[in-house]
Image (cartoon, rainbow, N blue to C red; front, side, top):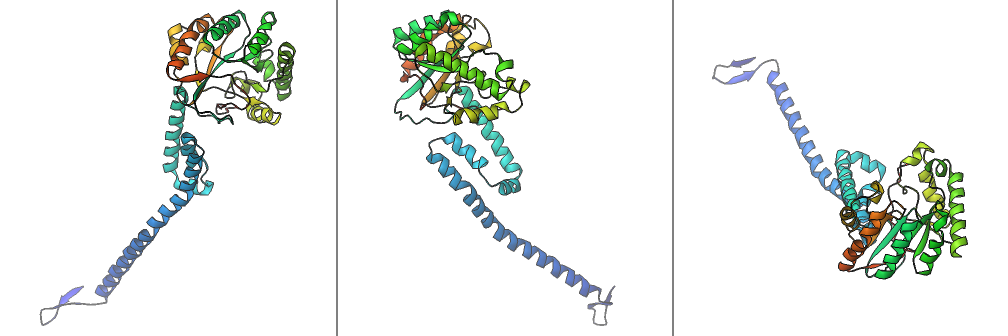
Length: 327
């Protein structure tokens, strides 16, 4: 309690004021300690961010792939450090994934870069699932336009196998796709896949007189249908084919002719010509049902040529777009 002495001044009894003064002092000390801690923590945090992120960013930028550089900043941070940064990195990673998906749709290069030295802009026209009667029409157009392309072939239409030889003799590349194109068989096991691959490889060698080491997985390396038959098979196959000396190719520009038969020509031209970047791998098909793909091809060639692209057939050293493996 407070009281007033004879001189009119306040005084404390029972030490209450003294206790209050001690409490105020302790609060001030805690605030000062917190302030000092923050002053020291902020520069330390900035330093840690710099040391963990900047070298990785520079490393990937030096490799010449800006997208990989930005994604690498997230992907290569030490797990413990990344965990501590919590939601910040989660949001950044989500943003980068959205950017990568946008670039894939736009046809930008998001795969690995081959060892061939390229100064010009290159487009690789690729045709899956042939040969067929339409393959002959495609070859006629390519010959007329003086354009080279790549055919990922199957063994489903032996009547037209001779077109593999013609394509090879005219300077095109022959790649392995699948002998049967029966997903339930091809992806029933790893052994089944390699048996199928060997069958189509033997066929190509028999018809063309040469072995080929380039391939495209049925459905691409990102396919989900394989999970219906063997869980995790694509994760294994993408590694094993490289160990066996093959180079596999996905694509970074899709004509969307696989969406159905008789897809409108104008839609195919728009989609197949949408590729951007220095090296573009365009997915198309040359089965009997893809008449509109044949019709669209001259306009697709004209579009890329007008933008200064040259046309090349794939080799083992060519740029190889790679999708994210989902199984």
